[in-house]
Image 1 (cartoon, helix red, strand yellow):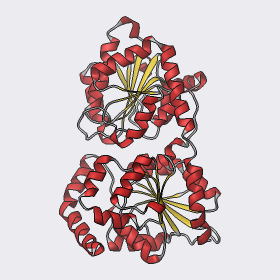
Image 2: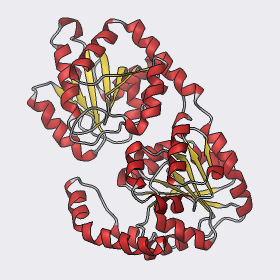
Image 3: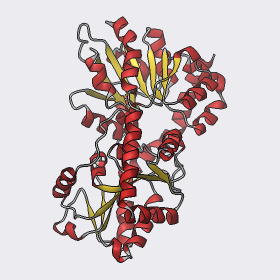
Image 4: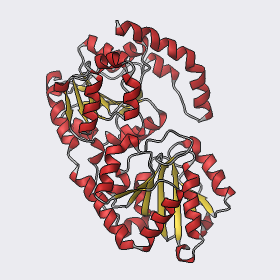
Length: 430
């Protein structure tokens, strides 16, 4: 019965709201490939003998980054990996991360779309990363006898409250997975509360921890400054900011720059969404700050204090510039909050500051604070005070950064554990 209801309600909801999504994507300059989402990617190359085909579904940028080490690990285990992402930014990131792999647009959850996509890809296993659970896909794969696995699952309390209104339905959906691995015990408990099978729901850890941990070297920093044409100084790098947060960060920065001892202070603002670039640039110019673009370097950039990272895919390496890193979508603004992944700067040995709205990464930000590698600052005044404290006490900042890097190291191993659990599915498909 719940399958029939879903097949009725999903198309109804889509057709009632699709004009909104078209206008939304046009306003925010988000390309949307209706053809591939509705009709699938077209014919693919035949499978390679003896190599099971794994369809890896990563919703957007965060999920692509989470799967960065999993894709090569699957290939080393003998699998052929086909990647799909729901968003344009996710597909761009996947194409950069794995340039020789096939990257597709994930299908809509209509029967026609899922049928054509699955027929074209012909997967032996679906590996869904973290989130973006679509029942129609799972129904389709179950009928074809193709197992589906949800790895590194995370479920925020807000999501649980929403799903809880139709708990019976989501319990049935979660039991379509042959295996679920979660980032934490809290995540496992939430999924069990929704109805997941306790014998097939295991705590493995967060795949995002499995990344190179390397404290920034002076030569790396010098090379970045030479490449960008940016000036020497003490840099604050604010990553993945959203509308409303830039005012808070710029307010803290300008109040510090008024003091003579911070005349060498520099700020790199990296909005999460391409659609925010123009608005953030306009805000910087309204404040009359000497500023430069990453995309459009200028000869006088050496004399500027604020820089806008208006390119995608460079934030991770540009954290090497930072004395202090800020992680966005965590301060009050024109967004719902939830936070972004703090592990990129932590793995570079940077002290990590964030606001109070980190419910998507609640366990991670709480644990990072407990080990002394991260600090939650609730508002502009607290941010200003924390930045001043760390800039005035560089030994304290370096110690905080070392603790952040150690935090990443001790939680690694999720990719190997996940691969061990996926091996039986791969062997069966050979």
